[in-house]
Structures are given as C-alpha cells and as structure tokens.
Length: 115
Image (tube, rainbow, N blue to C red; front, side, top):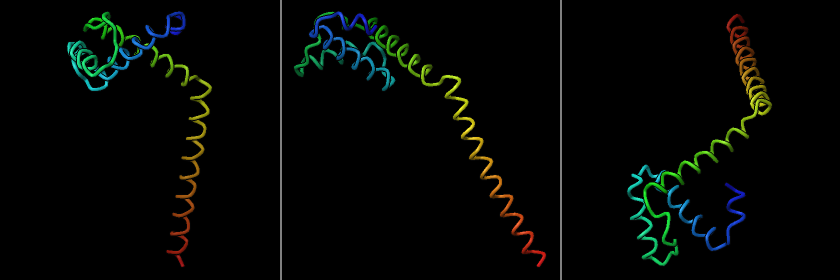
C-alpha cells in the first residue's frame, strides 16, 4: 500500500488520506459503514476537498480492511518471539522479587511472634 501511495500525485494522496481518516473514525466510533457517505458530504460542505470518487460504504469497508491489515502487521512486527521472551523474563524477575520480599516479610513476622 505504501508503494502505491508514493507513486500518486500529492493531491490524490491528500484526498485518500482524508478518506482513510474518515473511515477510521467510522470504525473507531462503531458507526455503520452507511454513515460514511454522509460524513463525507458534511466534510465537503465544510470546505474539505475529498474528490468525487470513493465516497460510498463499499469503499469505507475497503479502507477499514486496509487499515486493519496495516495495524495487524505492525503489531505482529512489534511482538516478535525475542521481544516477547525478554518481556516475559523481565516480568518473571519482577514477580520473583515480589515473592521473595513477601517471604522475607512473613519470616520477619513469624520471628517477631516467637519473641
């Protein structure tokens, strides 16, 4: 998708960016895809140039699917096995320290109870 956008002229790229942002808003707010054309009409009425194409609910669905794919890929790249292992190792170390402190605290309580 990134290669396609780089090859477009800047005006088309701006319009598509605005349409993707609008579709993302529709998804984020759990609105029906059918609201997309009306949202675009409102934005155009307020002076935003969105062009004349891609202003329907079917394109909204395609935009959201593309956004979802990119987000899933980004998340997948962030959660690599090496990263996950180091996070788990750090978490294990922290939990071990907490447990040792609690054991020491309990030991100190028991020792004081016998005195």
